[in-house]
Amino acid sequence: MRVRLAPIVFALAAAFPASLLAPIAGAQTPVALTPPMGWNSWNYFAGKVDDKGIRAAADQMVATGMKDAGYVYVNIDDTWEGERDASGVIHSNSKFPDMKALADYVHSKGLKIGIYSGPGLKTCAGYTASLGHEEQDAKTYAEWGIDYLKYDLCSFREDTMVKQAPNDKAAQMTLMIDAYKKMGKALQEATKATGRPIVYSLCQYGWDAVWEWAPALGGNLWRTTGDIDASWDRMYVIASQQSGLEGYAGPGHWNDPDMLEVGNGHLSLAENRTHFSWWAMLAAPLLAGNDLPNMKPEIKAILTNKDVIAIDQDPLGKQGRRAYSEGEVEVWTRDLQGGGVAVAVINFGSSRYSTHPFHLNLKKLNLADGEVGKNLWTGETVTLKDQEPIELASHDILLVRIDNPQRMVRLAPAPTRRPNTPQ
Ligand code: GLA
Image (cartoon, rainbow, N blue to C red; front, side, top):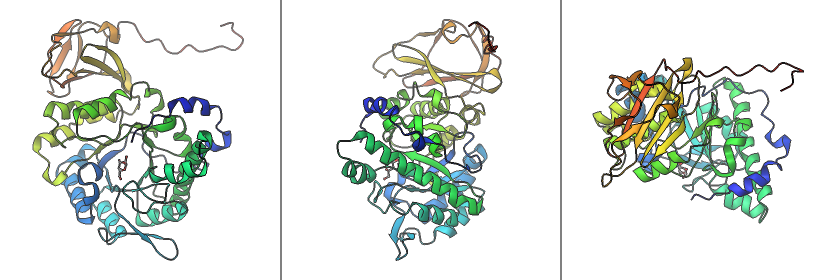
């Protein structure tokens, strides 16, 4: 359900009332200073998620070494919601007999727990959402011990935006931003009492240039596209759409190209490697979405590759960008803290075609001939030569970290402007 409203956005940018986008005062303890890492129930379990499954996921996060590799959040997606009681308090349904006890269990493993709702009457799967009960729900989540909320637009669009402001896109947008702001504020209020911050994840499919306004509303991450699925084509389309958004990501606020499909569907090992590496290059949240109790060793090896995770979690927080493409090969780079750089060379060619040998042009990356780095999938030290042929299987990736690049052109520090100096 991907609808592009981009042309409207430009018309609306000037029309945002400044008060609407004023940052929420008294912000909570900083969270998500690096992209959130964890696991989410939706991609594999969808409506089959339950208390037992969440406990098993938490157990496996520890047993598989994922926790040690940096995964923290165990996130319950849609279908946990029950009914509201006479006072309007939301209760979980029979799949989740005691949310507080579940949160305590996840916390006892040294992990954190996430939950899901939306600004409409119903969630995407048709369960009770938060409309009219935002403060109450935020308070309930805080009391349960929730650490992360994914807030999904879904029915709010048709039931509220379109109904209340038919044919008035600007008014619809105001309604939507207000709704996200309301929950952002409610979370901050609710967490004041507990001191436990809640990461705020906006899910409205990348409509309306969300990256421009989400951070001011307390958003720590925002989906940039419609839903991912476990196919190479969908993963490729989504990753490509991140190009150009790199300026919006940074510590505390991240573009979210959706949860990982590593280990799901029929993705080949090369595709799983590329998917994971690409999300790391994009400084994307790393939320695994696979069946953890039945994870194959080769999938675990991908998800726990600490060198690749270190690219994702680089404290500088600079999202990578597409440096250039040539035929079926794309080259992406990501600047790292301390002056290093990660280089990803990805072969998008299907096995029926071959662009090999591809010759890596280091000049286009402002890198010198003979850069020494580490191949993050083999662990070997490599020397990259200009115009060197690079052999890559279909949909595979070469990912190299260069800590001390010998740049072709030294990157000059930004000039200091002196007042009254003619520019
Ligand atoms: C939307 C979201 C998905 C998932 C489902 C749940 O489609 O984009 O990530 O949360 O809703 O119903």
